[in-house]
Image (cartoon, rainbow, N blue to C red; front, side, top):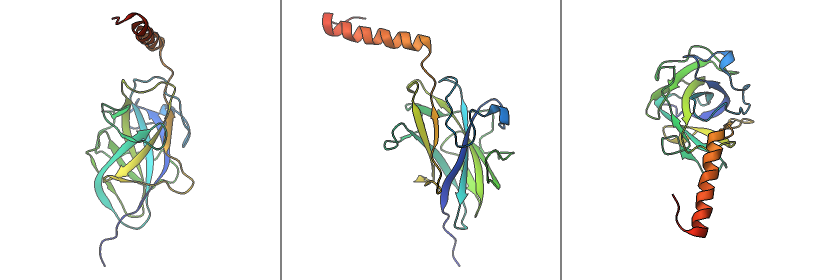
Length: 196
């Protein structure tokens, strides 16, 4: 009998602050499978996500995240996009130590890049932990979805499940002032010529 090809599904998820190496209940930004609003758009955050293997196969390969605001155009996490991987308080490649999601039966790894090889065992519901951070291009007061890929292949949603989502914080007062100044400069330059 040959090797069984693994089949994966994306299941439960929950957002946490990066306040501890292993998140605890008080670090949660919202309940399981509930969209939080971020307290700010600069702090590192953690996405705890459950990936189910349903065919009795296994792999040890890279996994990665993408984000979207409309569910049709997706962007890889990276410094030139709205969210990037981050060096959190967990250690990339080390196993999680507590189950924080419903139905999990295997510990996955802390992941802080798209280059980490992570194992997924046969018929396991594996809980893995991504540390990410908003970048300077993130939009304020905007809902973002996140989806998971293993070895470059999108992991589909389990029945009745949704992609992980969050809403970014409202723009800080200084951001709003700078946006207003930028708009004023644009309008002024159109009417009167270029302005610095």
